[in-house]
Length: 311
Image 1 (cartoon, rainbow, N blue to C red):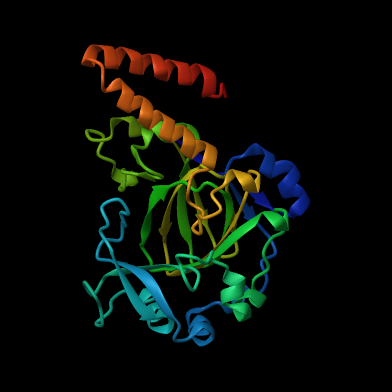
Image 2: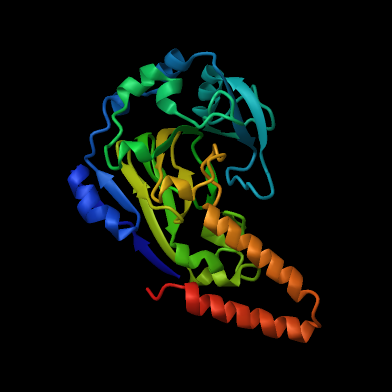
């Protein structure tokens, strides 16, 4: 397994990002980016004062390694100020599962079924503290998501279909990323990897995981991480932390499912291709096993020759 440090760039502005960093389509840590007063202001007490008693739906788990596939966490609802107090504490006498349980919040819209998350609209006071870097055309903006988590929380490896920047406001995060070309080595279920404990992977169960190229960085308060669409990422909060994700559409807007309020559905053309593959598999099931195997290999070969990129 090759391990590579994510490239770091200092004093990045819009011109440098668009001309030098964005065209490479690889992750980058951006330091010295102007993000406003949030880094100095957004401590626990300030957040409690501004957001107050707003009810929020959170992930709660006795295991810091949260697994979305096996759902080793539960969803609970708390007033935001109570949630922040718990998330910032190492042990809680008031708890749902255990005194050392972990908490994670991905703040959604008021109606998660219909509303795309827009941090600026939800919290105009906090929005005034945050200066969003102008790295993309404003008409391509999709969503902005406030994230708050306990120290030690590790989120499952997954990819997003849109470009995004992760603005680390306070606390530190360790982020491990894998190229889209490692998709076959990550044992995917939908957009998520089955390999949860990436630091101590079970190679008897996941032997291909040895073949991944591992990109790693530590985000300090004020750092911004550019994550291109389709890059897998696994995020661990080293401290109680607050961050904001900004997502935007890299492809033409018509390429995406307009009913997708979370921004995690595959582009329409990719979804159609997957459906065609499912129909092909159904058709192959009408053949004897040796014929099914033969023609499946032919189909794979054809896809590789016609659709795989050479780089």
